[in-house]
Image 1 (cartoon, rainbow, N blue to C red):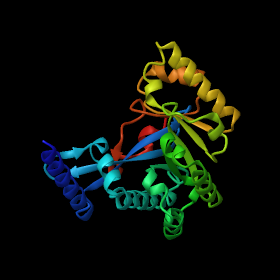
Image 2: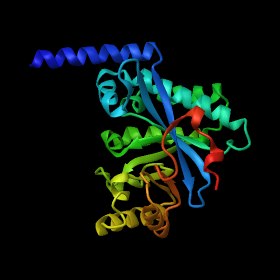
Image 3: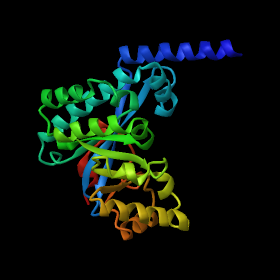
Image 4: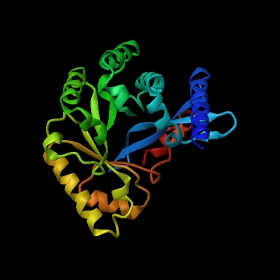
Amino acid sequence: EMQNLINIRAANERELRLAIEKHQFQLYYQIQVDRYYRPTGAEVLIRWLHPERGLVNPLEFIPLAEETGLILPIGQWVLETACAQLKVWQQDSSTCDLTLSVNVSAKQFFQPDFISQVQSLVLRYAINPMQLKLELTESLLLENIEETVNTMNAFKEIGIHFSLDDFGTGYSSLQYLKRLPLYQLKIDQSFVRDIPTNSSDKAIVRTIIAMATSMNLEVIAEGVETDEQLSFLINFGCMHFQGYYFGKPVPIELFDVADYSA
């Protein structure tokens, strides 16, 4: 039984290495909008186009990529592809103000040369660093708070913004939160889902928005799917939104800002 699991894992790891070599990954882009439904940017989400299994969900391969360290070359590719896309957007007046949010794993973030990796991409593609947003999770931030704060401050100096993903699902104390040079808090979809009917979700979301506002942080709600969710969020003072209500993640060929402009 144990041997069987080891064999499966080894086979999966081989497939993942092959996917990197054969460029089987693709980025999908999910629109982000403001309260007037104007596009403000997108989050990039990785997909694996497997030759036999078709589209593989990140939940199925990212944990293995993290464990094996393959997240480093994958993460580097995601960042580079995102920077190249920002470059394209910046040459067109209808997309030149859009931001791109990229998820960053702990392994990636704590690489000694991570800042110089990102900086060299920003320079190579000659993009505005303020339009690149790195999304971190709460659990990552708590791993080593001193190092995290130092790294984030160094990024802030070169103009790169941070978004705290899945906010409210982890254990981050407010003590830590105020030390982090964040730009944005992302309200997790688990709170957004039942906001019309669940009074504790309402209270949590209202509190997150009020706290973020008092700390001068932008707030974005993810997983917005219905009119009802949206109107609650707008009434609570949320300014930015992402979710199927506005658009599902799509490959860049299908991502057209004109589709979203009200």
